[in-house]
Length: 72
Picture 1 (cartoon, rainbow, N blue to C red):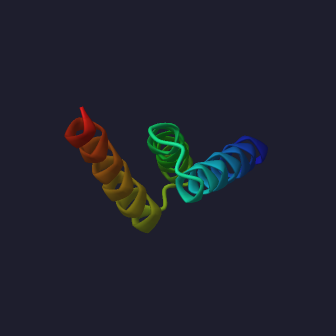
Picture 2 (cartoon, rainbow, N blue to C red):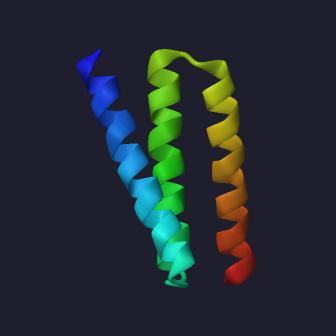
Picture 3 (cartoon, one colour):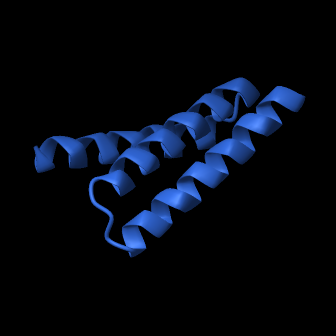
């Protein structure tokens, strides 16, 4: 269970840095960081088989990806 715990904490750190980048208006870095955080959290949710977390993070990832395509 050590590996999923490390994934979770890395995802947390990446997501917090993404939130800080959003607050400081570092575009598009914030979108990339939030996408990376969502991917890591989605991976973690799959590892621990948590359906609610899989749903939330898949939804966030889809929203962030949509944001990237809208900005292009």
